[in-house]
Picture 1 (cartoon, helix red, strand yellow):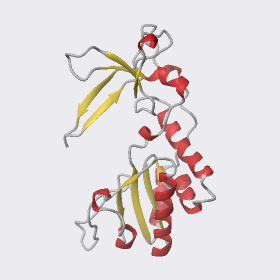
Picture 2: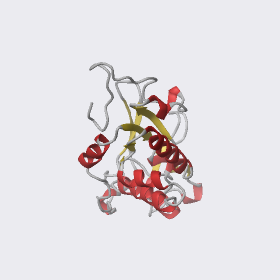
Picture 3: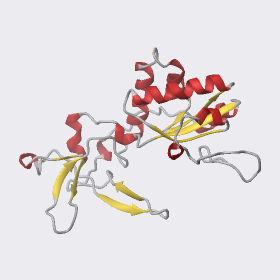
Picture 4: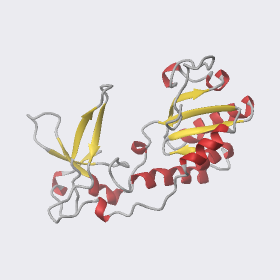
Amino acid sequence: MEEVPQAECQSPSAYYIPHHAVVKLDRKLRVVYDASAKDQNGVSLNDNLLTGCKLQADISIIILRFRLHAIVFTADVRQMYRQIIITKNHQDYQRILFRSSPEQPIQEYRLQRVTFGVSSAPFLAIRTMQQLADDEDTSYPLAAEVLRHDLYVDDVVTGAHNITQAVEIKQQLVDIMASAGFELRKWSSNHAAVLQDIPDHHKAVPDVTFDSDSNFLKVLGLA
């Protein structure tokens, strides 16, 4: 976000998103933005936004395709929404009021990125990934297909029939994401060779083995 210049504060064409912090059981802090909050005219930002058409593939189809592969791997797009810039003339509809401590004056900021709680955010994020696939299809054809068919919001759920192809897909995914400023984290696979160059702190767990019923990972909610 960026601070709003003093001359632009209290603009009649801006919308201010209420926000508050939620501390989860694992002590992680999340900021919740309420773009459905009504303004003084009784309307909200979400009331005035088109949500966009459905772009997300059905989760059942993604899981079924995932189960066909002999070699599988998963990863998350790190802070996916926060890597996507909103066009400049729309950023004033994502203003917030904030101060670092009660002793400081309240300041106005505008959020420059796709923001949780805004009804168009899922469409914008998925549409961005589809555009990335189209733009980089020639350079990274295998990764482009994954972005089109094996991505559920920010979860990569894919694989291949052999280890050579799986490693190639993984490397293309890393490269295509990096070309647009995205990073993949929380990697996991059923074959160690896929993750041999991934640092332990970028993995879902350091080592995964499936030699007993007690060892498992959740993929899109399924163990």
